[in-house]
Image (tube, rainbow, N blue to C red; front, side, top):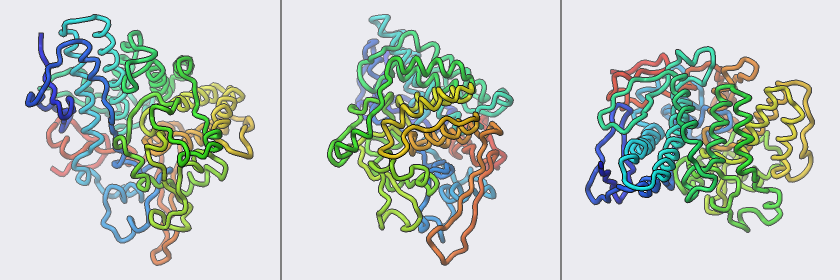
Length: 474
């Protein structure tokens, strides 16, 4: 039987500089992983982070302070914020924490999948460890393909360039880039392989539950426009956990200043992942929402009123109608890159809307809004058209699925459909009167939506080519 050595310091947090090869597993100060139970424990990885800084300002929901743009040398943030397609971004993206960390996690899952069968012990535990690793491996590939490739389009996915699929523990692996369709096929196979062996109540919150797995399955089907299957999976997920945290009642209790709701106490959380790690919301001033999103919230939405700061003279441009997340993670845990039950409700609502079941779609939205809207109009009226109903769903997704990559991913997938594609316009600056105000435009088919692979990765793997028409500077 092979033994795997894991460093005690990082508990097998391996580093990977590209999808060309894995780094060696360092045996220094290591413990031996040799039983199924130990492999199962490896699935638990608190503080898993997915930084969004390479693309956060391509979303119409986020904003930059004027002093961080005006008079500054353009960096990736400014290029994204001003929708500047004249610059080849590759040389500006030397490395990417998002890319490196996602493949690091995939390396971890592949280690479990490849080696657990050789361990001595309970076969059911082996199957569970492998299933949990597969559902997370699928999730990480999903995040990567939706960042570095075009949004899934049934008409072109078979030829659209995707990402490297890492499907085995192999220190000398040199994979070629797969197409978007191939990556989605791989993701869906991992999901289906995992589902029969996952648990309704796993050993701790860092292990995937059946509610999470079916929620993720629903999301993948939705992104592929497999609506009937997405609906079925969403309903299955909600059969395991359909709880919605009641923010209306929470507001009455005094909100986060009076009552802390850490991660373990938020009943709607399905997976514990972070943009940066446990303390991501301590840097809330970095996540400024746009005037458009601020206006969309209105004045009676608990999601805004409880958690955002719109009055700071230090972190905001006064008069810009912007706001930032002002609540520490220890006071309230709000999933940003993981999944939660309310996203499943929103998937279900979108499925109904796409099937022209407008009453059912709005009923689902109103179930959510009953726990979010503090006063005034709680129940939305039922529109007469699919496009209007979809607009209600999309707006609710913007308000509910905040700050992470959900809006960026939504823009990419919806832009592949003429009916829902959006041309984003950004008027800037709003407050500063010493520089000319300009209108910046991001077209639905802009290459900016496809993030280039990091330069360091392209240098190490000649098989990996860009999915845009930008130039590699070597």
